Length: 273
Length: 239
Image (cartoon, rainbow over all chains, first blue to last red; front, side, top):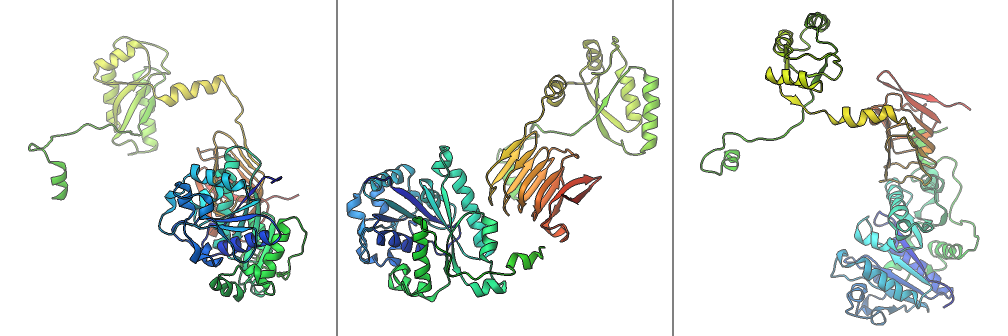
């Protein structure tokens, strides 16, 4: 392995905005493009990632077992059945977030760095221990937001925590690289002013936009089927995740699922000039 | 009944207990020991605000009294003060002779207060300029930044749900969407400057306005905010 592994946290603050969907598709996309990738479920006690990735019936050991030295990594890692190069480290459903110790997480990440290029950490909602542990060791962050004021504010809060309480912040290293993922976007509703527009969200959060994922019924179908939506390449959401991964890897692609807005929600609300 | 049972668990009820507490007291800074002059001035003061000093506990400060006199008549002064409604409760500072006389008249000598002793004197000796605190990162929701003793300069934007506080002025070169509190130690001259006023709350020296009370014509504008009397004024910045 010539390059150092990159730890990427997928986080949001608010729940239900598409963190796990994004983690599953992002990790799958990286693996599809040939990168050895592992995705870790940090939502201890509310294990979901395995369902979205369709591997729930193959979970034997989990992340907490590895932290507690009750199992080794090879026993706990689940090989993905859809794409090569992808492994899943599931959360424990029977424990709670207190089982995530900083030393334990650091040791497991250190071991994973030996054999993977990308380590994707699927953060739980909130700003408590689980979320803090998921982002603490991150090099980069995908901040998932919906075009809705409370979601944007919670993302703003998470960005503040990334900038002040991550290991990079504490040790004075270069800051965690931030990327915005705007999920569940409906251009026509944003155009009508029912939801925030891309521009509104970017103005509030002020971080680079990695991708806009359109609202799509395919997301729900593929979640229930246990297939990451990025594999549904003919769907809008799947294609948007494909573009997102390409952009993350350095390709410049235009945003496909956005129409330009004349007047956004914020401007209507405050009657700005 | 519940309270009684909680408090009096001993067989014999306690007659009292001692506790420390802090009070705000009026200080009478005495400049001279001329009783007649003191009484004249007292009468004048009370005439300006009748009833204002009724039952007001006062501490007599002797720091500025240059003359010293053995056995000065503190009882007489006490009577005079009581005549105008004030209740002297003690003395502080002053020469050893004056303090002895005060003790003799039954007054406790109070220790020098900290603010007078340690904070005031270095001020005069060392007028070092207050330092500004500069913040280069955006201030995100949930973050709180305080600049003690000086100005706070934020290069970026202050998000909704964030709070910036300064003893001096606050300068924001991005949008101000959270709360900004300038002059929190009471500096009436403190100001807030921002490139786009979208704040949840603005405050100077304790006078504040919430978002609702900010006129739409001031919203999203580059402004400076200052006090005029007790009123927060919002002036547009023109280029």
